[in-house]
Structures are given as C-alpha cells and as structure tokens.
Image (cartoon, rainbow, N blue to C red):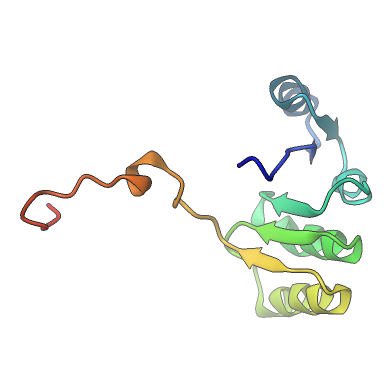
Length: 118
C-alpha cells in the first residue's frame, strides 16, 4: 500500500535480521524495544510467538505505537486485559488478527456461474 512503509523489524536471530535488512532495505534490530522507541514508527505489527504477545503489545503501546497483533491476542484473559488496558491508557489503536483480504484468491474469487461453491 502506498501509505505504508516498512522501516524496521526485530528478531533475536542474526540471519533473519540480515535477510530482512537486505530484502526490505530497512533497519533490523535484535530487540523489539529498539523498534518501538523509534520516532519514525507509528504502528508495530507483532508476529512473535504467542507467549510474547503481551510483552510486545504493551511495550509498543507504552511507546505510543498503534498495535497490530496476530491471533491470538494473548494466551490468557489476564494477558488480554493487560494489553487492552495499556492500549487504552496510551490512547493508541489495537487490531487483532490477520486478514487474507488482499490475497489474490480472495480479491478475485472464482465463483462458478451457478453461484455454488464446490
């Protein structure tokens, strides 16, 4: 999308960091805090293993970043509540889940003439 730029990522592993920096021409850090503390970032996409969603979503919210986090939001209701509280307290937006709305098969589904999926 022309309104979105990928400017940074975090990964604890050096090989994925190097690949990201090479493929996207963007900064790659070892720690998520380094991404969240950047002033040129408005939103953070969290695609870490589920057990880190609470920590990373709260970190992003506390740094004033809007948060997009893959499903599930967190592993417990208490973790979910903590994320929502951090988002509310910091007046940022939270989106949970991912969409396939831009996948080619969804954008232009092949529907038979009779209208019935098979």
